Amino acid sequence: MPRRAALLACAGAVALLPGCGGRIEVPVQDAALHRGAVLFNERCSGCHTLAAANARGSKPAGQTKPGERTDGPNFNVRKESVPDVLFAIRNGGFSGSIMPANVVVGKDAREVAMFVARYAGRHRPGSGQSSGGQGPSSRSGGP
Image (cartoon, rainbow, N blue to C red):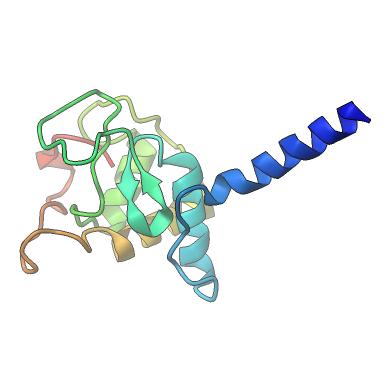
């Protein structure tokens, strides 16, 4: 009996983890974008920040100076395009950072790229200013 109770407690804890502290903001009705957000949360949130995917990244909140190599760009403030995101996914970022290449592939990569392009940059300071989307040759960090 104690073993069964322990298993139920563990199963309950695991079921709560995906929603811990937030939720994915993309409507389920937008199937491809929602799936892109879920994949971003699962595969990219360890390093990257993007509120729409409930992703907090590894950089401490409010830190503006460069930090650890694992501190990926904050996509709340950095706008991206689908081609740039696909380039970064396929090549492991833009600057030889430690982002793994092909962290998602095929349809999954396209859905993540569409999601990031649609939702990134929504919290940029100064509504008309872009802090990204410069293309791969002028980057200093990888998506």
